[in-house]
Image (tube, rainbow, N blue to C red; front, side, top):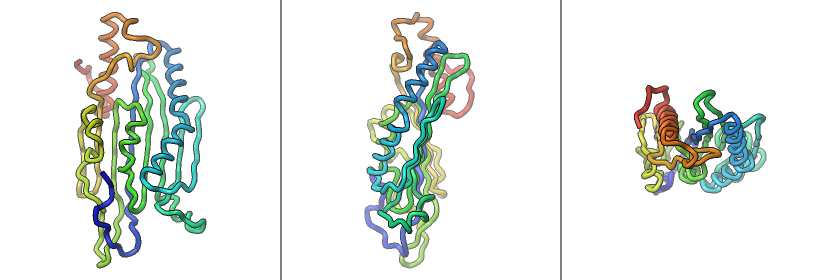
Length: 258
């Protein structure tokens, strides 16, 4: 679906609505030893380094129809990476750039980390796509979901400000939406449990997603299920389920039932 209205609105001036799509994406892994924790974080830093993140955000700018003004990227020591891309809706002359720098941008920051005792390691990516005008960050939603191995996804979408039609009437949104889920493919929706928390009168939309089913082998680092006893398999599944549920609900929980 497109974030634009089917019938182009006639506006007085230009469309200065700000649309922001924010992600928190989590990938979870079981790492038994300190060495496995270090290897997992090293692996994440290699897979999601600044170069690859820049390529992802560059493609996002192409998908939403934005022009890139500037790219800043950094790989951090000991771990993590950040990329910021400044964009505009139209190609701009140099004298016009300054007024657009704080209005349209793409950013991603990564945060690998591990539990001190229980063998759980996580990778979080924070992504913001903020646009001004007709271009919509929602058009890149599925591309971003598909480019990260996501067990938990927290999505926020908000439209800020107002623009005016030719009569002077304020318009606080320029497209129809009642849920971020409207813009997620059916295939992805079927893979996740989802809940919405929306504030319609403020044009604020929030969706949480948690993977329904998973293969334990995809969560083991350096070992496979065949290397573990039934008791160990049950305990690891319990830890992974606990971690995913706590991130999904945003709080520490009592023991989660399998």
